[in-house]
Amino acid sequence: MRTTGCLLPLLLSALLMPSLHVAARASQLVMLVDRAADLPFAEFQGDQVRAGIQLQLGQMLAARLGMPLEVRAVPRKRIAQLLDAGHADLACALLPEWLEAAVDWTQPFLPHAGVVITPQVQPRPGGLDALAGQPIGTIKGYAYRELEQALGRGFVREDAPDSRTLLRMLELGRMKHASVNLQYLEYQRKLGIYKQALHPYLQTGAYETRCALSKRSALKVTRVDELISGLRSDGSLKRLLDQYRD
Image (cartoon, rainbow, N blue to C red; front, top):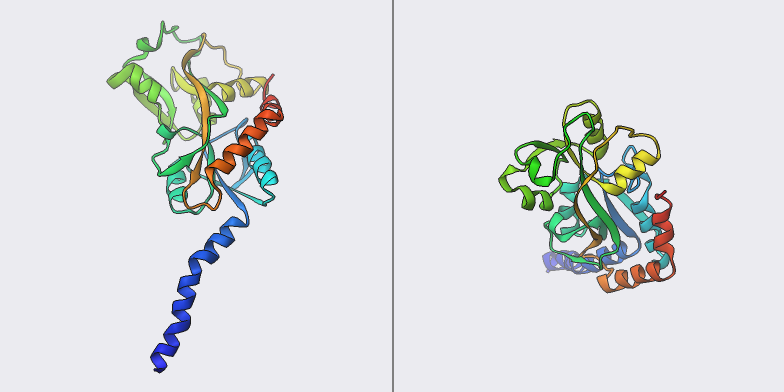
């Protein structure tokens, strides 16, 4: 009888733990940001996300939910794992083909355009097919479906840890071509950070990215879609993106 009496509180505690966990998670919005991102998408100070589109988007969503926001900077390869395990609610600026995870996806709403750039000190490529067999600068852990489809086995990656390093390697002549996000490239040129003369860009794709929502989150994708639609209709999303345009 004494053994049963000791076990009963433990059993009750174990039964209550899941609901307590959900209640605790529902008290704040936890957003993941890819550690390899750079402005206009994210700016970091140590492990903290200090500025950028993703931080401001998270702040707007959290404000409309009436919840505090926690933003965590993590490597791209860990995003799927953390969402699957329910350690975060969402991550944005993604596509399903970029993230192998059992998550819910919001509507497309964040513009993205990919381009391959070549410095003018190099011969101008006639098109994407002309790059077959030539190393193209890429970011480690990122998927490049358009280049894989266009070049097949002729797609040769030359990985860098992040976009900033990628452009620096291009400036130093350590690579001849690089695949970059057009918004990122134009923002760096606007700030005067990247000034290298380039041939006309070769576009690899233009579309809108989404947010991936953990299936373990107390927040449902229908609610996030409602919030995104609201940001579109009242002009908040446009005003956010316009901050980082010319």
